[in-house]
Image 1 (cartoon, rainbow, N blue to C red):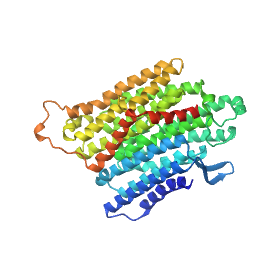
Image 2: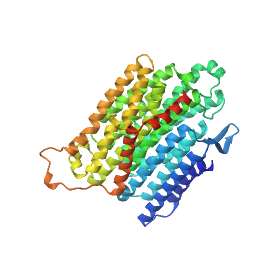
Image 3: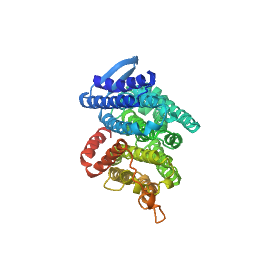
Image 4: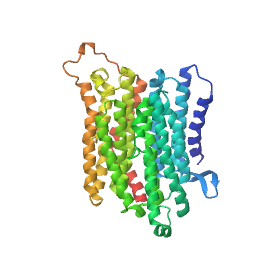
Length: 490
């Protein structure tokens, strides 16, 4: 069980060590240390997943009724594996990308701290532990948004802080009531609200559930509290944008999953106005995010709006509360994580090599950087939901789950919105690939030079691209594992 504590404390302490030590003049030494810290953290995380055996670790108690508690369950494994893979890939990618940035030591220090806090969120065994690390995640990740120090970055960081703290306070309001009406704050499949309390306080508990969904939904970029995301992600360095968009927003998703399936319980929320309102908000977010991405000319901001849309695919699956839709939501957690991290790293590599930021400026990029642009194209197909990528499988389950749910109206409105969003996704991702490989007759082929990014940038992108395809070609083991999770929580 102590591997859980080690996997959380080691990156946090090493991150603090980098922050407080004197400036490292030898950049190579800084990168070697950071690389070693990332690898050791991942090894400790894997050991925690493999050796915990479902045991409980309680380092200390805030009060008699508020223990800080860690436990590894199936949901922990899912989110922790995604976190470790993406942090490793984005971390090694940053060793090249960040060479032209200032304050690298500070960047890597906060990067490691965020890594540890995210693992703590994955391993949190009760609501109060989850809330504490949810707040710490905001405070530790804000410096990644502020890193460049530009006025735009500062304003985006402040917006991120304001929105995130507002959402966290909504969740905290819910914690007070759960502590009063629940049997325990420890996560339990089926929920922790006593049947008597549920019967006597149905109205207030439904409002508390809705507030917690909105609160955790802020981090996930769900309408109407989504505006921080397209402001914050584009101004951060590209590897930070990758973890913000692929992993940190999933902290909000994990919070909603814990609240709905492990605190209130499906039986309490299914068929209520809370479920209906949640589905409406997710579908609004899916369509709105896709439309805004379609209209956005700046590549990183386009990908940020895409995250707003794609994360709500996941939330829609959970809101339907059908076995198929929840399976699709869990699978899309993994698929979106790999695909969106890969796309942001592709964007970072393009910016690194060309210094350009707008989509129309990358005409002919496929001729100059074919490996990078093929990865971008395959990842784009995954986000659209085209086989043989994992995005196709996850969206298939989402649509099938909605169709079989029997929910009046939503059983066909949901798949329709998802289909329209997929078409918009193709509209905002594929033009870069098409113009990259087919720049037209007026393109100056005489000045064409091969300029693939350095290998340390390309390899993480290739890994994430391969993962997105493998999840589409061989989904059965993963689907079987996810089905076992769904069977327990529904």
